[in-house]
Image (cartoon, rainbow, N blue to C red; front, top):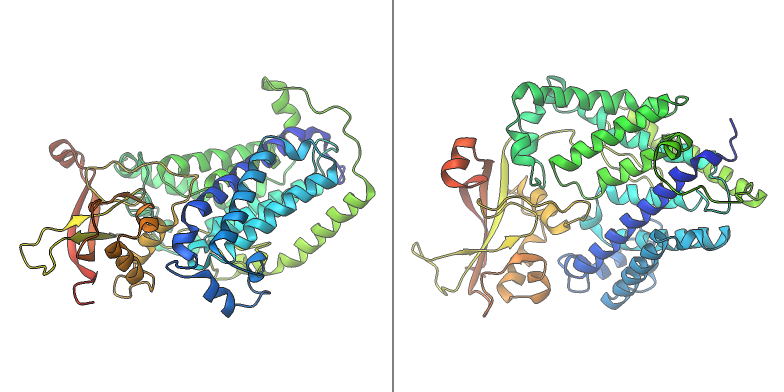
Length: 474
């Protein structure tokens, strides 16, 4: 095996790098859409106050030099433009050093956004994008054959994502071991998709088969990524098929898309090129220059050292999900759904023009793009785009007895008719002037049965449980 170059991996490198660039693009566009509202100067959790409290070593980034909403926009627009250019092939049109610089700039720009984003950016797929984006710096471009060492670092990342998710389930909620978690998960997941209602109503034996297949693909298959061909390709295809199943069943931002893109590092590129109608490989690929080979080996050594902490986490009976061990978000621990919610609670925001609400007051609901609201509205597909406010509202509803500190500022912004906040919503029931009062009520949601669906044409049945917050006494 040549540990310095794999000429047959040119196709895998091409797809992986272009795919990661597209995910970067989506991430920067999401920041342009919502960062100012969530964590801007007047955000629900303002970044300037956070950056004053947190030292650079814990949250490195450009915004420690200066944060303003204008600076955030400049960073996000620059990142979006650069990632679009890289996705279109800019990194292959410049010399190797220039390609590395382009990827490094993307990584620094997004690291700056994530490390100023606080709870809104505390998701495993943010660290996954940063770790993957960092490895892209060292995957080369059309000038050289892809370095085998970097391809194995990519596979090591996929391995930790898959095995971490499998172990956290096996060690966590007993329903994963008795194969019953999917009786509930499709209904109670953070953001159901347009097919989730049908997934929920699959026969229970199929739900058990889903759970068993999940254990196989996350606990056993990842080891196959490191086997000789064609076994590694078959393992990668199993990972890709599983991720596509998850894409169809719900909305998990870019987690699934990025994982399946990275899994292509294990695919036999030469075989794929023979069986697919693809252009010829790049001409004149040369051996990597010595400085690049030495750099790649140094990065591999650093990853090996930093792997101590996620490996210890994988082996621990107290395994933690989605943990970054350093401010650069490199070589992280991953995992998902170690516990599954049995009952779905949703926070519904309502407003009224009545200055003195009473029992007969009419309240009108605000509608969000992703989270369930109107029971008759079919859940939409937004992944790989990320709706952070919608996701955080699902998390907030898990413990309504202890409201998240940003919920009350959100209610007040709705009462004020803040245009920036309202721009993140699907529907504003008060287009003429702001309401006199706004409240947040907790509801229990469940999918309708097929019979209820036929009779009511509703996808959800909801039951009000009580008022969480209100501006009536402010």
